[in-house]
Amino acid sequence: MKFKKRGHFLRPFFRSGRFYNNLKEQEMVSRQSYLETMMYLFGSFYKEVKMVIKSVRTGQARLPQNVLSWLAPSKIARYSHEPVITWIGHSTFLIQINKKNILTDPIFGAPSIFFPRILPPGIDPQKLPKIDYVIISHNHLDHMDYKSLTFLRDANPNVQILVPEGDQHWFKKHNFEHVLGSIWWKKHVFDDLTFTFLPAYHWSQRGLFDRNKSLWGSWMIESQELSIYFAGDTAYSHHFKAISREFKQIDIAIMPVGPCEPRKYMFDTHVNAEEAGEAFLDLNAQQFIPMHWGTFHFGIDLFETPIKQIQKWWKKNKSILKNKQLLIFKFGESVLIPKPNFIKPDHKQSVINK
Image 1 (cartoon, one colour):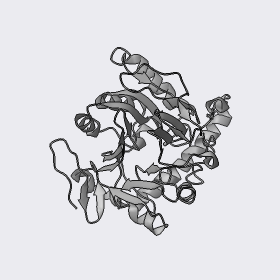
Image 2 (cartoon, rainbow, N blue to C red; image 1 turned 90 degrees about the vertical axis):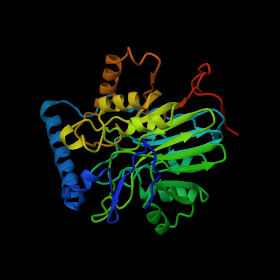
Image 3 (cartoon, helix red, strand yellow; image 1 turned 135 degrees about the vertical axis):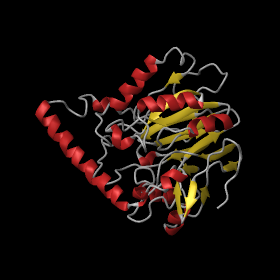
Image 4 (cartoon, rainbow, N blue to C red; image 1 turned 180 degrees about the horizontal axis):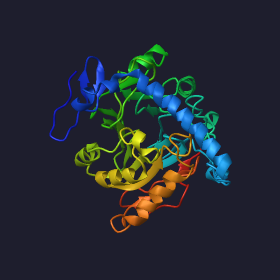
């Protein structure tokens, strides 16, 4: 498998049919064992039970009493000239730009019995507009959901799906017609939109024996006037600086901020809120949109822990963030994103309903 060679272009290590973040990781035999995944799932279930018991014993509820206030569905337009972003939940966003509709890592239900959904999708799937593009960051069940994807396929027969290298085989097996695989730094150009698959520090697996058989990564979505970075799942690494050297203007960074705890189990696969903030600085992006929080009980965070931590980090670093914005979305909330060098328009307007 060939990868484009440039000075700051990171590339995954590929050997014996499996991808790794680097050579050192490939040498760690435990990374290749499906037992690690099973232990993680059962460990998560055990920690979930412990959190429930703790809540009952101490009276400290894991969900705030006002949890439903985080649900704020907006009226969704068919298309938008101006960039409008709607958070559906977890890592699923509807991005409407240049009269095209894009979905990221769609999941409208729960990935498994281990992780029930806390709040419903911010958009009823039946009320979604026509979807032109779906981008997938990696094949974990909470990012590449079978039911959600087959629903989208049936509702949008011509939808173009962009996936990491290796995952196109799964899609073709399930009768998806328009699927393109991608290695890091590969560009896909469609009319006035460009999608570039970029590095992330993570892993892949859907079954017991397919660990790292497909790649993982992040995406850059570019129009003529705006660039939107979608980080997928990732640990903190130097790939953020490499991306910033390739993309001099990143207007929006959609970044995971959880799970934050237990850190010793998460640090090698997921950024916490503070690390997401540091990655945002590495990217030199202008607007930060948090994701991957509040939808499922991953880790042992309380519901609002990731948001409170990113707000705390933002306040602590306000002197170097004075020209940047933190945009915290509610589930289903649509926000009209100002274009660079434009006066910020009114919130929730300039969309097409006809």
